[in-house]
Length: 120
Image (cartoon, rainbow, N blue to C red):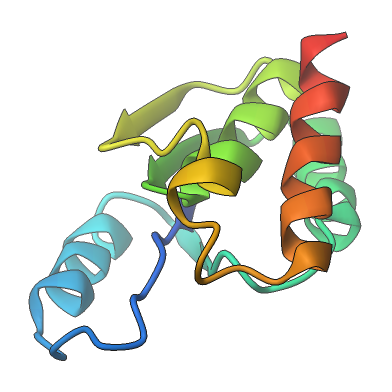
């Protein structure tokens, strides 16, 4: 099938109780594609991922995005930039407000700048 699934994980609250449900979701996700990548919200700049996506597009491979919570911001950006199919689950459209107490100023600025990029 030559497919890539990119899984954008949600925010992990510092006081959250560890459970296996998030791991189980990713394990199920992995069974749907030839290759998968898991992206955490704090994995840093998205440019490396963009290069990989451009490589897959040039090879005519199918790419699919799944965004959870704060992961929806990066996945939406890539969806709009490359016209990639996307599924959002419990999207956090305003993490700079709702997660303000847990994000650093640089993370907030990064989120705002990504949102500006895909709104232009």
